[in-house]
Image (cartoon, rainbow, N blue to C red; front, side, top):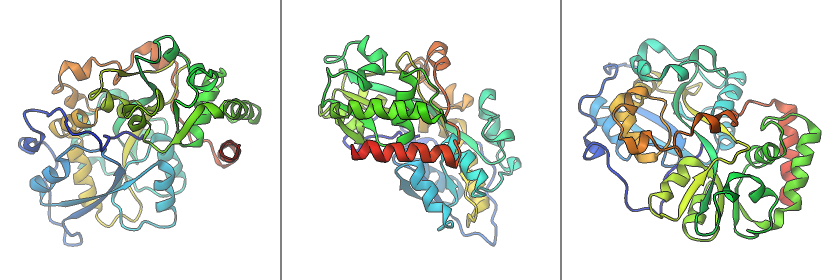
Length: 360
């Protein structure tokens, strides 16, 4: 879901002695000339959620020029396409929004015959409850929402419970929460012992009241930049996507992360073709390219999120494969939940609660 590399960073680890060289030896469906399609593709993606040279490498390998525009969150992506596709081919919604967009007839089926690199995907990701048979989506990255924190300020025990964020006054003014309703309210629900996907008005109200009661402790509801606030020293705790925290951890040894014992969100971002895509054949070629082993490894190495690409993982170093901040242990994952499409009625409960939280 949101992840990406902070613009304040200046150094990155390189993959295979330079990611600019990964185009050689890639396995993807050969590009064919379709008279109805120009050699272009329009990619709508999260910020810096791609390898450093992936788009240029794709262009070199296929002759197709990839243009990438950025969205800030799933709501922006959904709103942009709901009124009609302005020209995007491949998009990257999170699992619950894949389900929502399928329901709203905003995606087109994928021709798996044109995605031979789907075989690189680990078996556990080749099926999805939110998209049976992977008819509309291909897995891109997955991860968790975690508590990023400064070890010099926050103890490991304090970082092992969401109570430190939602109930304690110790870090007043030094906490950044995410900037969307379902995640902020959802993790309060987890602390209270409820499901992150609760549709119960009483439970949602209880979470709302907890957040409002301690709102004075929160420096900001951060629009996907909590990791930057943590890196700059403006906060000591940031509720953030694990990959974002991992990226600033590379630059500052005092920063680390943990998924608290109550658990949290387990998300999966997917590659989909938007309804009305002007270049559907090129879209298939591009998605197949992203699922190549070397291309996938270069992307994962650069953005530091968990890849579902088993062939790519075989090319990665042990530092990545054995990093529990990227690949949490089974005990941690057992307490996590994937977001589901809640439906209009429950979504309104969250949106109304979020309005009151922000107004408080």
